[in-house]
Length: 155
Image 1 (cartoon, rainbow, N blue to C red):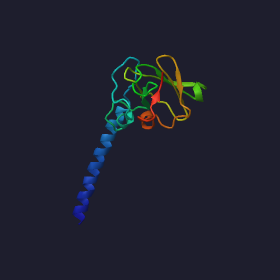
Image 2: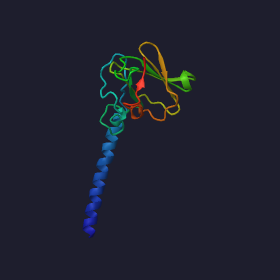
Image 3: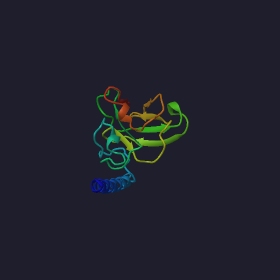
Image 4: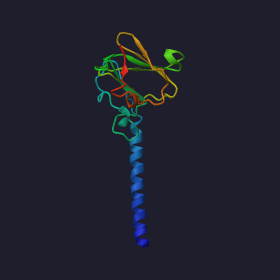
């Protein structure tokens, strides 16, 4: 019985070492910059929760802090440009903390390191019209709440 316990303990220690090594290796991936740019078409999976892959240990390049997809007012087509601005107050008041550009596929994302808690998003569409989110952010995973029945809309 002692021999079996020793073997099991040894296997546990070996597998634990592999897990720690794997975790450290993937943590380095979070140091990678990956920020959406106006006109870029490098993004994919519009409408999906970007942070299912772009997270520590995920398959995506970099760990997103904020990411999502914006659509037209009918929620049928993605916007091909625009920007998301994050303010400390509602309706574009307070201090502007960060700006994220919408790419040509309608996606926006950033790996920039800042605290999103309590920030209020403002979407400026291609025509310059603004859409305000009435509540502050509790997560940067915009497509986790804004699904096909509740999309982020702009003009």
